[in-house]
Length: 130
Image 1 (cartoon, rainbow, N blue to C red):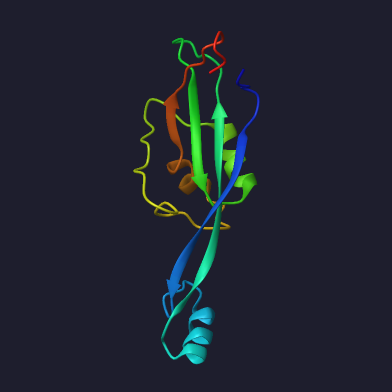
Image 2 (cartoon, rainbow, N blue to C red):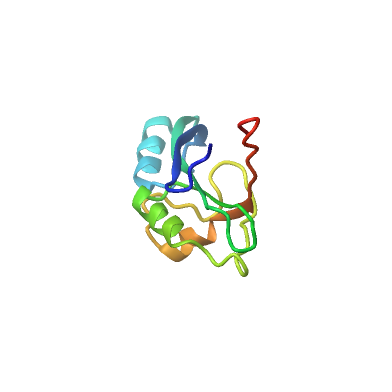
């Protein structure tokens, strides 16, 4: 059965190709340009986490879940998911490929992270275990 007393965390990542001169770290750009003369590129591993918090049945009889996919520090995500969101006014972000728009590693701004939370309902069939 799903547990509603914690946060499920999945370590995720993907590899992307970064052309020479297009890295977000300007020091890496200058080193690559000096070494390769503007040709080629390199593969870069991008790490992030997916968080899932299942909530117990509320007054309306709904089982709600909060999902967050972000490279922010674990403590920032846990703080936002523990505090929760206002289900009546919260708007889910639009899904994008790769890291979502506005996802910044090492960012601890709770308002930015809260805007990235997706809220939905879930159901669990006790007989079939799903």
